[in-house]
Image 1: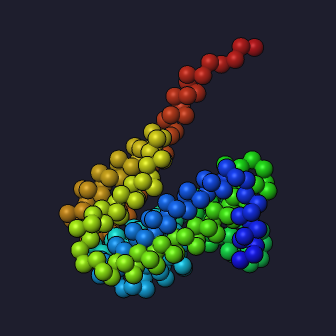
Image 2 (image 1 turned 30 degrees about the horizontal axis):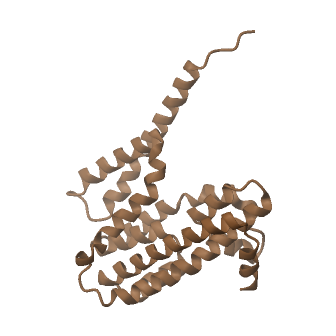
Length: 240
């Protein structure tokens, strides 16, 4: 606890403000996740255990969304693993701030989009390390508190449609991927994945269309290669 407090005290004021806003937003999303999970008929302990052990909002939303819709648990787990596959390059990008021993294990568990983004935005190593640990540890606390609060509140909600909470799963997932859609290659792959999922939804059990949407990844690779080739052709050759 003292180590976390020292980390927060070492944050520059502007960085502390930005991290605090992210903690507040994610805490509110955590409340939504806990409430929807329990009010969908799943046990009270499930969202809290998942938040402690998994601590990955996108995969948690996807897993619970598939299960609540009657999907296969195996398909839900595979979908969550696919979403978390992005953590592999994350590890290479911020491996220098994780430390060693038990700190490396703890730092890996705190490796989420927000903590990695804040770390990579800093130029100095000390500031990058402080940003990573402050954001990761702060989000772990706020997310789990929010999920616990939402889970207990969800026991009093009999119908999520009344409050519009049933729309939170797709809305949050869309918000998570929205910044990436600015790239043409990613946008093309997303559209292809949506087409695949919509086409296979009437034919396959719940959860499998999401997994098949991964087949759209080659679209992104082909689009990116094509863009690079066009850039080379447009670039004038230097005169000797």
